[in-house]
Structures are given as C-alpha cells and as structure tokens.
Image (cartoon, rainbow, N blue to C red; front, side, top):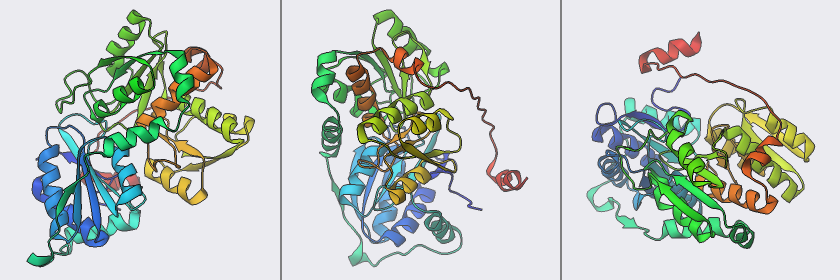
Length: 384
C-alpha cells in the first residue's frame, strides 16, 4: 500500500507534514524519473509560493528544466504539459481547507502519474536518494506567461460562440477566491454573457467561503442568483477543475446531473461514443448512454483513472459525480472552464432554463459521508 499518494497526488497540512524539505525531496524523486522539461503551477493558497520554490529546487537538482507557470488552474497545467512539456507538478489541495496543500504530478500527456511511478517515487523518498546532478548540469527556470490566455482561447474555440452570444445569459460566478479567478469570469465575458462575480479575487485564506463547492458553502451564491434573476450560477473549487451549477430558481444542481446533461449533448452531437466514469457515479449516466448510443466504462474512484481509461479507450467524454468533467480531446483531466462553456452552450442551444433541462433527466438519489482517518491507521482500515 502507498505511504504518501492518494487518489491524485499527495496532500498534507502545509508546513507541518508538507514542509519545504518534504516537497523538495518528493519533487527531486519525480524529476529523477522524468529527466526533462517540467511545468510547475499552483493555486492561490498562502503556502503555495513556499512549496513551489521547494518543488522547483528539487526538480532543478535532479537535472530537469523548469517552466514556472505561476498561479493558475490545474487543467491549465495539464493543457500546457500535454502540448509542450515532459511532465508537470501542480501545487494544490483542490477543495480542501486553507491549511492544506499538496502536489499533483502528471505525465507527458497531462494525466496523473501511474501507480508504478508513484511507488517508485515513494521508494526513492523513503529508502533511496533521488538523483542529484553535478553543479554544471543543474537545470534552469523559464516562464510561459501566455499560457492562461492560450488555454482560455482554446476553450472559447470549442463551443458555438454565436449561439451563446445571442442568448445573452446572465451568469453569477463564484470562484471561491481560487485559481478560477484567472479564467472563468474572462471566458464568460468573452462568450457574451453578462457576468457578476463573487469571491473572484485570489486569496489563499478563502475568506468568502470554503473552497469545496457544496450546497452549504454556496448559500450566498444561491441567494444572489435568486435576487438578481440570473440565468445561472457557477461555482468552482480551489484549483478550478470542478464546476457546480445553481439553476435560475436557486436550486443546487448536483454534479452527476450536469454530467448527465453534458453527456447527453456530447452523445447526440457525436452520434454515440464511449463514456468513462467511476463506480460512484449516478445510474443516470448509464440510462443516458443507453438512450443515445453510448457505452459506459466504470473505473475505481479517482479522476486520473478515468482520464487514463479515456485515453486508452479513445473515449468521448468522462468525469465524476462531483462536478469534475473530462473532455479528452482537450485535457486529460477535470476541466472547469470547458465544463462551464459547454453548460452555457447547452442552455443557449436548447433555449430552455437549466431547471427544465435538469428536470428532463433520469432521477436517482445518493448520500455521501466523509470520515477523517490518520495516515498510520489507513492501511488497517482498508484491509478491514
């Protein structure tokens, strides 16, 4: 059983377990395997700059060249790696509270690394030393300041812009002070929407709300959508790979419903295709696939497993029930910006409110709980 890695990367309390020394050695182990050009980005957490510099130092020490992408969404890093680099590290704890941070490692396709590579990194971290190159082989740091604009432009080009502009949709955007502050508001305005922003100033303390876009955390967004007669509310998590919607009536729309809505549109548009999701996703996904010529493949929980299966099976579309949708022809990972653009496009194309579009989908119920578990007990708990 792995000692550090979870479903996607390593997450710990910043400067407690996730210290500069910890981050640097882990990055050096990763760099010892990649031996190439590695892109590094992070979300706006207070600890990100500290950890990012440690990660860069570790990568340089192992002989990698580093591209510092700055503060930006996880899917933007994945987009950059897939198109230009040999690997990538995203510094983020995603939807977790501000005290946490983490490292997401991706391969040359921008997909979370394989179990085998995670185990090799852990072995180097605990039992062996990472490679340390000689003084004259230490890598250099470069920047790619235009990558966010390039990413947004690519999203823009993947939807029917004219249809969206004609709809003149009024959208309230709550970025939760996370990385989506740099993408979603600009994208929606570029698409011709009337945009009102909430929590769209990057702030690692997440003062407006907790970064996880749950119904409890989005009560203010719900009230603003109702009070302004908006067509749609959009919320993201800390690293902008998940999208949650509030319909025009102020109803919280669960992620599996937006999954089913986009799945239906994609299957109709492409005349069928392979859909990949986890075992935790609603049975509605299977109903939609059966009706519109799709085939569903289920994986264990974890978006990187879904992404890898999409690549191997040449799948059309995939994701999870938490608002994380994956468009494999663009990014092999959950992508909040393209998810937002597709949802807005569907509302505009169908010329129906979101509540009506959701009402037409198959209906199922589910309930989830979370239980904290210390690292030293996880092995026993999993075995039992």
